[in-house]
Length: 350
Image 1 (spheres, rainbow, N blue to C red):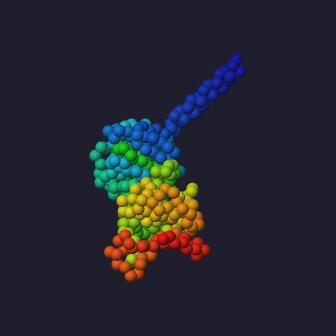
Image 2: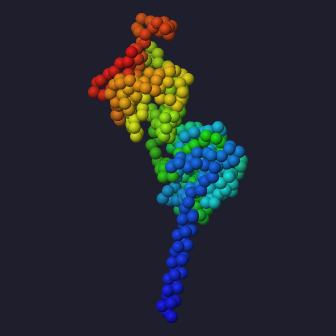
Image 3: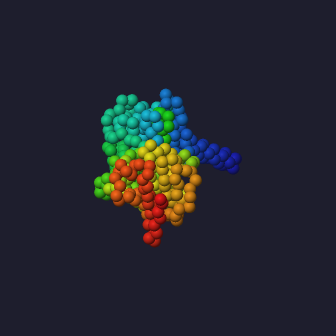
């Protein structure tokens, strides 16, 4: 009889363990609606009349108290929200609209704290900006929840919200066509960062057009998908080369997967999703194959390939005796100079 009771007790324990595992499996599942998730990329899939929302599988904790979202595309209206919500938050509402949720909205820079009416909080956010959200570690020990938000690594502000027994889960909301973000749930942020880093000029005013390229000081970083021929990032300077400023250089800090880096000159209205040199009115030296592309998708052998650590340069060798008016005529010949500073080699294109 004792053996039979022991057997039934064993079966009951097995059933309870299985139920606990099933509950945990359900609990730690990400939830999203009207969004397409591709790896760490989230894109809006609604009709702009309906909200799309994503909720992460696990709440913020002492071991993982911060996350970041990089805006890849602001879409039609840039109505992107980043914040914290309860686990079973309604997915047809923006984070911050319903009770016990809080969010920083990129389109108006307002903070929404359990209400559809926001309060002015920080700057608006655009393509390439990073929005971060976290909970200060000391608030865990004090039994409080002090939520803070960052923009491009710098804290914007913080607010104390009621503690939640089940924790607060990272959430992203979108509300217009074309919106897309890259999510990093393992991001790290430290309030003791060197403030001098923040003093660096962003140099954004030097660029007339930026597409899928993020500017950080003197660094340019590709932020596109890189999946197809149309996924090209373009950074075009605000001012053209002139006799007073006729040359520029780029150092390859990170070559990425395939070093698809092109350096050259293009007309002001050059297509944003075409590498320099591919379309008319442009010429460029391509690092990955060492070819020169001059208004065509087919390049010609030109120079050596370039790699991480190389410095590529491009300039115009203006005739010394002609005026600007003369140089714009059809009979004037202008020489384009493309340098690759590695071992002293220099290549010229005429």
